[in-house]
Length: 522
Image (cartoon, rainbow, N blue to C red; front, side, top):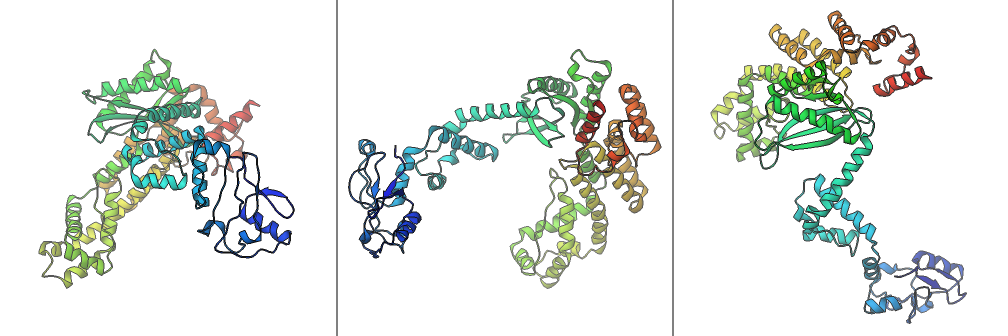
């Protein structure tokens, strides 16, 4: 192993580190007159040096102050040590500093550092769903060699075996540490993997830290996704959270028929009391984001969607007309996707913003444009209906984006739904308002009302009298021991002093209540 490379000034015999800048500064200090020699830039004398030996700085003929050593092709470095001679050939006089540095790093990469790079490489591959064989791609290998010369990347077999196990075990340990003692919300959903095989994914959400953790992935094999099977998975997942030392307080799913029935059965387990106390006192409800997407489908006008999709597909797939559209300054037209929420809203927006360009292209190229497409674009009734529909979809999209935020809580969801109700009552017909109310009743539950009532940002101010009464009835039936605290909270007395309600916007709800309870305990 090489120790630090030292340089000795020939004039005063002072030793210093072999940094070029430092050598130059010191030579000026010693008032050495150095002659530039671009053809002979050696800065070290020939000879051998052991681990702790110093190397003499050459005389005036051998150092150029105006040219950096790393940029001078003829600069050479001759360094010999007993250890290097045993394992490597003598570094030739034509070796550059970069090649010398590379040879040093090839031997000085510690094993712990090598393992660390391997772990980060593996996490990158897993996190981006990259093919394992890409770690052996020549260009990727060149990149890593430039960043860390001499480092040997793990091959695809290491990535798919021992490193996968190591990263998995490390991740599980981190999850256990972060979930220790936490109260979490559990969610369940069904998916299909890249091989179209059905799987059920279960995750938990830590409200205080705003972090999501995947805790279970279950291969369904030949099991049917009926409510009984899903209930068994839910109960098992709740019990398995014991290994993370966290407590599940709420359970959310989408509103598919099998999931909705499973939630009802899980709530019945709560009511009758289960043998395992882990499954008691769990709030169950449907995903508001999913229900908002259902609302968008409830309001969908099929003729608008099909006609606009046909126009957009034509302009995207027709080379000549598509080129004319781009030359006219048209922006990208978006096709809707049923599996991606808000995409039809984006589709309508792109169509309406570029309608005048679409119309102009058709007018200027009538012989080259399909007559059906021209007729649809010039249909002003279709355009007006699309504008009216987009106005409704836009407010739903905004609400959906708010609901999907990591910071959105049950109490915030009530306000989002109330804003939507106010808009529909002012701008939509009675049939559309009724559709919204049906989805509202599907989404919100007494725990939503209770959360909104106990949130100092909202204080249940927008709850109807009927909703407030149902909330108090829910408290009396399921949590009678907190009735007194709820009344004190509403009256802003007892531990809930009115001063605590003045600074709430920047404080997490859980932390706010935790602080009040702490002060009450003291």
